[in-house]
Image (tube, rainbow, N blue to C red; front, side):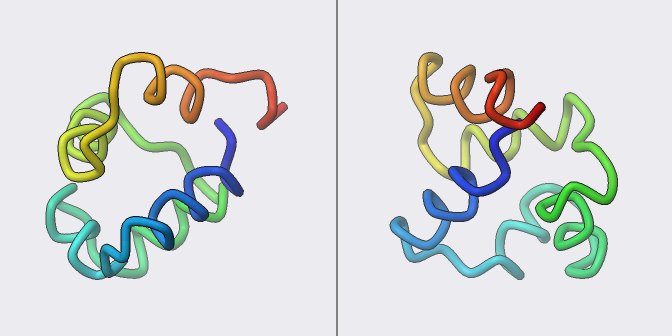
Amino acid sequence: MDHQALKERIERDGIKKTKLAERTGLTPQGFYNKLNGDSEFNRKELEALKDALHLSDKEFLSLFFSSNGF
């Protein structure tokens, strides 16, 4: 996962992280932990982020399944 690119996308879209936490079913702290790489998003959370950020399939794969995060 490319954590930095995800943070930049959230910032660029102007979506509040607390709103994304709500959309993914996470507490704000849980969302921040996952956003910072302390734990991983599960499939349901990833789908919610894809919808909330209006990501294309290509953008989604690039953000969450790229080799940049390894």
